[in-house]
Length: 155
Image (tube, rainbow, N blue to C red; front, side):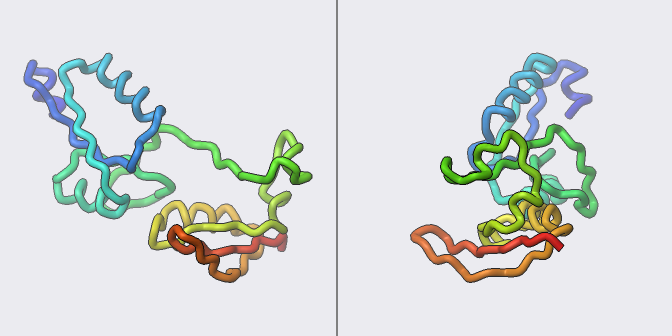
């Protein structure tokens, strides 16, 4: 594709992405367009595991993924990092703190969607809690897909 663009041909980048890619991706695409105006980017929104398979099979040229450190047969290139936020009720004592560390949150329940919904993100959160003891709590059933409560306590 790069060779086609250098010779003046139009290039098409087939890029796998998440649903609702967000402002950061749109800014990156605008910068890419400024550098390579003839490049056309075709976004394909599919689940992460399918994106990786599609790149391996040549159906996509590249894919955006989160929280992966390895992907057999593929090269991972960090593009940016996203901060991890915690949502607390406004009246919670920790909500007034300017900076929180994971240890401050260890006594609070952590609700995650089931691992099969987003394995890399689930693993990232569990890895972040690796210095804390985590025990699986009860399943919380709502109108949306079920969540699991994890309690992380300091070791």
